[in-house]
Length: 334
Ligand SMILES: Nc1ncnc2c1ncn2[C@@H]1O[C@H](COP(=O)(O)OP(=O)(O)OP(=O)(O)O)[C@@H](O)[C@H]1O
Ligand SMILES: [Mg+2]
Image 1: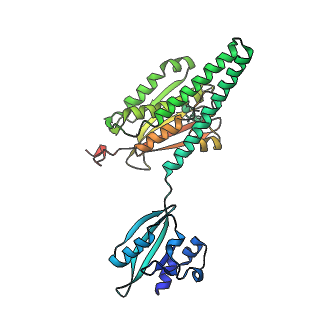
Image 2: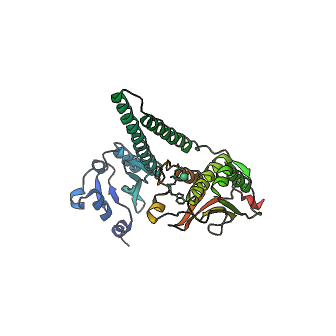
């Protein structure tokens, strides 16, 4: 196979330059990337096509003279990799492979989060401002308007409390814990509500589950959110039941599962798709952060959440948590 063929088969944009960074060959992917044909590119400086990384010429000369590889050099949305280009063990230039820099999901999440947050704060604030203006014009005390002021202020308070909570799990405080004890504690927190609403909680635990390494406060928080959603979903149902099951997951293995099943309102496909988005809520007093926070907590533990739901029938939320200990051993292989 000729060098040209290899160059054309590489699934990334690739250019070959001389020791001074002038283009001597490119593959088609590179032509597409910079939107220029090889005819145009030949002899031009590679650095003129990647202006966000001023050091390109230096990197090329380094790779060429010192025969070193420079990998993952970032230029905006690209990673550039430089390596000396040999023909019959003689260095003939520098081969430059361009890879798209992976988008940081966290950055994307945080932008969406902040947009959502400012939107959510602006709504109640405009309510407060409107009510305050009316009061000023009326020059008298109006009970309804004052209650708008209080309610909307409380809404901001709830929202900000949840925002603080959602960023407060960066450091996990891991301990070996009995997950069944945590579940029972969570349900106990809702004792009064359960009695009042007549909701029945059924347990189906696998008693052989080992203790696993978790941050008990964070997992409690996650389970509160899931359980609260289940309760809210069944309050209007004829069958008011929430089932909590635990066991060993089959897929993936090495995980335990905690499943919260409710026979409540269920979600449409669209609702299900939006469930984990920050600030997505269909409830009058919801912040839409419960599921988002839960998902973050579970992900930080190396786990994942799976949700099945059918409108009008009910919802099944399965939390998968790894049985690994911090020393890398499985908890159940001790
Ligand atoms: N068990 C469930 N049954 C039906 N719908 C659910 C269930 N869990 C979540 N949802 C839907 O997903 C939305 C988002 O849930 P999430 O817990 O993030 O926010 P919320 O419950 O609305 O507000 P908050 O958790 O702050 O009280 C809910 O508004 C609801 O529409
Ligand atoms: Mg909720």
